[in-house]
Length: 366
Image 1 (cartoon, rainbow, N blue to C red):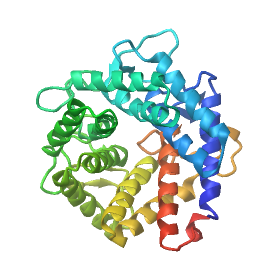
Image 2: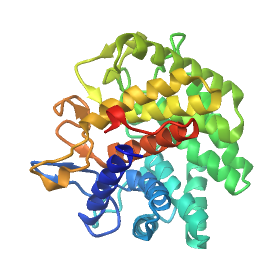
Image 3: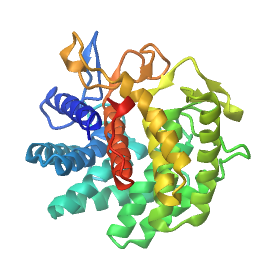
Image 4: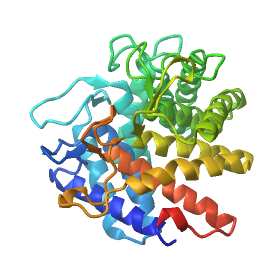
């Protein structure tokens, strides 16, 4: 896989540096050339670990597997007695405040560690987190408590339903499966006639970065497959298709979208391009429609061209910025670890999809 393999390896090496920055096991939230490495971020460390394990398989790397395990062991160490994980970046002298979304994202790592090792430590930790998530869910399927914005339950919490649904299946727990399904049903009530979602931004009434739009799409799609929710897949596919058509006409994704698909084309949210690409790739796999594959390739091709190759700042090599241009509205002048994670995920997925139809990755991926 010329081009693609090199880009993945560069991003993986950058994630390794982000883990080494603090020597506790977690991955630093981002790198900023003027300020250095931010503190480790439990939320994103949780879903970075499975990506490192996947790369360990692809590249036959025991080192990456060991790094992923160390990352999850750190997460278990900072888990609260009740099962939740804290909001924001980690500080050694603080217990933090509970976060629904962060706890759900850590579940990805806990579940993968349990599957990979069979260690009951991870089984217990995952069960405890999943149980806490179900216990703080409101009767209508929303999570209003322990949200980033008080009483605001955003549509991108579908990305919390996904690991909860997986826990329900892995642990044969109908209560968890029901909580995930009710969460998706509540989120689908946000869907507007034009395919947008009323609450898919970070704050009420604001335009949504493609980052949270991608969370919304992928969370609904993955949960619909896990729980066989055909109605949910149909609803989100309508939204994904409308965005794909706009992308084909405008030849680019906006950095954010407001009501009525009012796009801000003054910047690109690079993380969002990767996540939208993952949603379109998933729909290509489910439907076989090549237009989804083509859209994903184009959206991610831009991110490939923006990956840092040779920088005077060694800690930037392999990184993906929050925005293009770098001063754009999403994570300005910063290189977040989740951008590298989703970049790796979508490149691996696209390379596998192309391989299945006999196409080698090259050209604009170089």
